[in-house]
Image 1 (tube, rainbow, N blue to C red):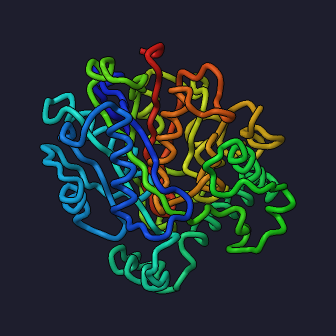
Image 2 (image 1 turned 90 degrees about the horizontal axis):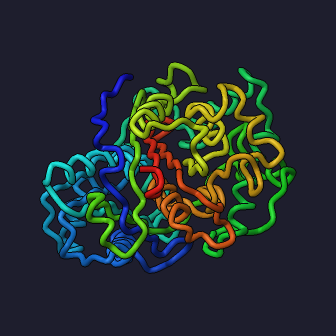
Length: 393
């Protein structure tokens, strides 16, 4: 894929506010209430009011016309609306259309927001799965009643192990590293000690993935606010500039992947790095959508942090844990911090907070560049964002 991105877009837009709300287990909240809580916090964090918001990006698994309900609930009248639904990558993919809308003058402040009460919801989980299958038919897979999404990712993990000699221990390293970061985050859902053996001995979900190779199921809302770069300088929070963004999708069903070990991240990452004028070696912290441990290995490889097949070796011996050669998922990720249905927005928020120096015990000193990557479906849509501080402009 070749993308000829206007170079003037680099750094033209900044994230001026970001926040989460109700993350973990919070009975009594709806998806919309969690979204609204995060949205209000993010807008206030940006030093704005809801009346300043004239652009909106949002998506939901359960509602096809979700942006309309969000507009109504928040009481805003946006001139720019994007409700593109690509699964968990949506809220990183929303960056580019929002940037273009801001640069064209279509709007002045874009709110990107999401909420999910999937852990505390009173709805029957089997009914939810059935309704999602009706909305998202996969003709070659659903008739066989697979355990989705775990079995799809297990296919990829098994192929990676066969093709490159990747071991279950190396997959377990990803989960252990995530837990070590979560133990530095007071808001992480699971901070209990976790060893490699704990991961290997855990209940098998879909071979070779145990329950500790799989993300959590939590509630939570997340939101961030985008404005033009010149305006961000006058707002209270340190601006975090969007240096690069790319989105790609090669398939919906896992059975339609040409190679179970190579994802569309190859294209989304290439586009983001080209726009940013940076390389993987320039990235100081990476937030990767870790719905399953295999995700982290695949994305490290496809983004160019290591060669294809070397992801296992890259994460060994605490390579992505605190003190390792690349800090990955410093909040604990979907494996230990939380996973409210679609995790992408939370990866981006953690990148923003690292660049603003707000992460306490998990803060990486002197961070000026960060990468956030979102994944949607079953290794389907991929979106990559590269963010930087003022020093990177």
